[in-house]
Each structure stands twice: as structure tokens, then as C-alpha cells.
Image (cartoon, rainbow, N blue to C red):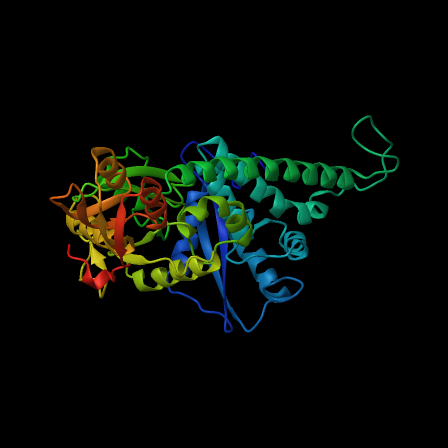
Length: 434
């Protein structure tokens, strides 16, 4: 499976493979109205075309066939009538359920995780993204290997391949585990390098763009920062973290990072493989929760994003809900800030809101210095925003400033110079004059 770009075959240059889509709604779980349409888009993004839809309401999954034997037989008849050989189920299936469904229907059966993995494989543009996708594919494939092999007879030993009496299945499992271990080490190295880069710019206020896939995060990054990032009207167009610098009106720089888009019921294997890229959200000073203002299901998708942020432990990071595509919206958003990344409408207000959050995050202090040389002033300005700077007759200075991280470093530096007279604070954010 790793390395395959799609789960569907191309019938002709113009015709995509037809599939039967099976949609199951369980009484025990929440079901959003957009889920069926979204699964159709997933199929199309993976290179297929929905020829028919089979729906079912259930109280619980069937352990053998997930949809029950009767519904499976109905799916087989429907697939035959539609002349399709692939069935897509909009939930995750166990390896055993896939095997039994394939035997009964005589069709290839694709579950939700395999479908999304196929799209990620198509969209992966960088070596880093390809490594993460391959790891997710292998983790998905490993427990399913037994169903992929029908030749399980004992085979003789081979140099560097099989041990005595080792089956081909055991060989493949061993190779898959070895490859998983290798990829995990590569990702760990990538994470270390990324963490070092983030530490180097730790004094700069960081903003992460998070939101439902295709909400326009990359377009927003491009317009705000003139980033030149690839943005397309398709699901999961962004798989890598892209960071750009934005200079605010106050002169302060901030780092804005685009991240992989979320989707309802995002598979755990993908969430785990992309956890290092999502650390950008976890470590951010501010999250812009980007949503499509023109989407009829916008509220439900914001809920999905909030739940996903909770899954990665980022629910307490300060955030602003940004309703993008206001130029296409039929009504006003109920809360948050409405913008259009395409036209640039209200992006100045968004930048001002980011600046306001930056100011709130600073460690504001009153400083009195007995001596303030040009070197001292330069050192302070490189580490804080100075709202007020007044020199005294004795050669000192009185300052009202906000430190980007903590005033502790300044205290140590100024004490080492023997020039600090007094420091008061921290000052509450409500007392800061902007």
C-alpha cells in the first residue's frame, strides 16, 4: 500500500472508477448533515466517482460485516447492477470485516481511513509529508496483512528474507515493522530539527492557523504575509507546516504558521503521524481558528475543529474564530471576525486583533534605571516593546515596557550592570495603554 497514489484505478483518461458508497448512521453517535456530501468529495479527491449510495441506520455495528449480512448482500446486488467493483464504507472497518465483505460482495472494500490515506498520498509534495504518509499507511496496513495473502504455505529459508519455515505473511510483517521503526526514527529527527528552529525564534509571538480542510487557511497566509504558498480548492491541499513572518503596525514581527486541515472523524493513525506538525498549534501563542463563512454547516465544522484541538491538547491556547470567505457568505457570522482572504477585506482588522493579543501576552513592567547607555537601550528594545521612554537629568531613564517572554532575563542583565533602580509589575493587561 505505501507508495500507491490512489485506491482507485483510472478507467480511461476522462472516466474515473465508479464506486458504491455505503453510508451508515448509528443512533449512538452524532451525525452531521454534511457527512455524506463530504464522503462523496473524499471519493472524488481520491480519484473515484460515486455511482450510487446505499444508506443504513443502525443501533450498533455488526461484528462480522459491520453493516450486517443482509445489507452486505444488498450492497453486492447494488454493486453488480451499477457495474462497479469497489465499495466505500464511510466508517472504519476491522480487517476481518473488510475480508468478509470482500468475499461476500466480490468487490474491493475501502474504509474511511484508507480513503483519506489515499488522498494524503496524492497531496504529499515534500519528503517530510511522504514519510509521515508512509508511516500512517504502514500502521494501517500492518494488522491487515493477513487478509492480503492467500498463499500462506510454508516456504524455505532465503538469505536475508525468511527464517526456516517462515511464511510470506511473517516476512511481510517483519519488514513492515522494520520500516515503521525506521520511519519513526526519521520523524523523530525531523521533530528535533523543527523544535530547534522554533526555539531559535522563541522570542517572536507565534500564530497558528487551524481549521477545517478547504476553509482557506493557505490563502489567508498568502494574503497576510505574501507567502506564495500553494493553495487549491480541494481537500487536504496542505500537509506540511509553512511559516511566514508578518510585521504588525506596531513594528513587532509575528510568525504565522499554516497547518494540515482537519476533518470530521480524523483517523487516529493520521493524527499520530502528523502530531509533530500539529505541535505548532500546541506551542502557539495564538490560534486563528479559520472557518468557511459561506458553508451552510460552518457551525458544525467549527465544533469538529474545537474537538480536534482538544484531542491534541490545544484547547486552552488563546484563539480567535476567523470566518473566511465573507465575500461568498449569505449572512453575517454569529461571532468572531469575518474576513475575505481572497479580496483582502477586513484583514487589517484581523492584523489589529493579532496585535491586541500580542500586547496582552507581554509581561508589562515599569522600569527605573540609574544609568541608561545606548547599549542598554538597544538591548531593551531588542527584547521588549517600549510604550514610554523618558530620560532623567541624572542620565538614567524611566520606561514602561512589555517583555516578549519574561522580565526575568532583563532583571538579571540590568543587575549585572548595576544600573537597575526599581521595577514594578507585572501590570495587568487592562491597565496597558495601547
